[in-house]
Image (cartoon, rainbow, N blue to C red):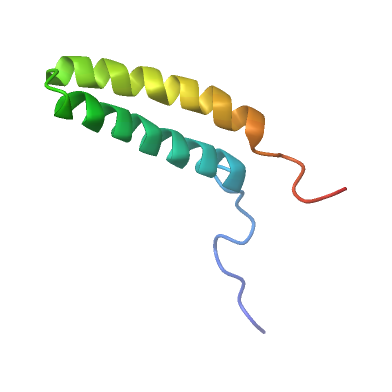
Length: 72
């Protein structure tokens, strides 16, 4: 008798869509923070700019990434 894996019945913590939105938003925030530091601003300004960019990117990606799972 074959044994099932221990994670077979457990749901994922995040969906693929949520993971994609979070990853893309963090990349946008990191780019914004990096560009802010490169412009000569301090770390505090870079963290504020990156945080604002992450917030805006989450709202944007939530609107443009479809959540229908390919069902039409």
